[in-house]
Image (spheres, rainbow, N blue to C red):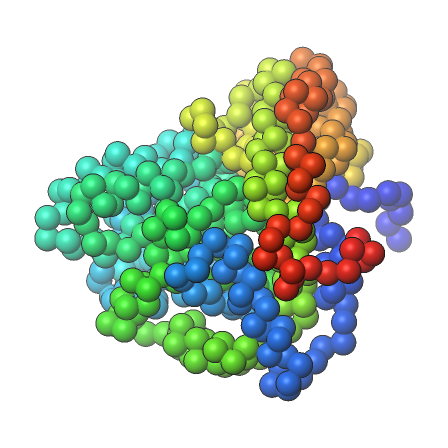
Length: 414
Ligand SMILES: *Cc1c(COP(=O)(O)O)cnc(C)c1O
């Protein structure tokens, strides 16, 4: 028998994030008939609520019982034809995985190389599109919040780059770890297909993923030649109009999703984004006070969802993570592919507050000493100074936003 550990585990990986009790309770409800009369309200509520989360009125949302990777595939197979050229940008591990998928599916991805220390470069994308006079490139695919590095790509600037080059390519954005943590505006930023997942900013367990689809992407899907069945948008949309799904949806996850949407509406998206940004700033202050480097080197592109930290030369990030887990019951994210063992990642996304952040950073600072990793002390104090300076959410944020009424839940359930 393993030794019982008292207190709550700190799940500080950048997804899955810890699931709040309200959502756990919502999920722990008897499964209902997904073709029965009660289900339609659940389905319609989730679809409508997710449009609000994506900040779209012009677009539509599709919900899959799948991990984020499934929604990546759905974005590609619904809009493109075999042999199509797609322009992708190497922001890090997740961008590389999406490119590999495109290749496997028979597309021809072109990868603009990056150093894994910043978001996608809008100027480089514009230059490449200007060269593509024959419009062979059918889509530009970028990762909004690159979870392997903690860098954010400037989506609005990339939209402007595509427009400046007068290029008709679709703009596809992976915001799996960005949505509901850092600002993402589907309509305002002219995104054509957005991809997201349940287990990061949305505070749910893994198991649901999403596409938001613009009218232009929908039009493209009518001519897209790639074979698709499970991921087909039309099957989904036909059933979704009445609040139903073409196959068995993840019913209990949808109960949880509706609770998550209600929680986001009660807090307000702007407050959610400000909270994440503030926690990112405090975390970076701690990292720098320890004398370490943040992986993202581009000022203004640092993520509010997670911070990736360079381990000092000669020290194993994985051995350090084992120490934080063993002694402080904190799970930190590992370095991925070329950053393996050189980087650890601190997730500060989802249902998270100042005291939880300070607990996490204190555990890390204690573990640095325990693991005998050379560092300066005072990281936690530096984070506290940032939290004191930058005031938390404005008082107005405790009021539900207008329009939140349909998602508002009994406050006593908190
Ligand atoms: C988590 C994540 C993925 C993969 O999602 P899965 O749910 O693991 O399939 C893809 N892209 C980004 C940016 C992610 O953070």
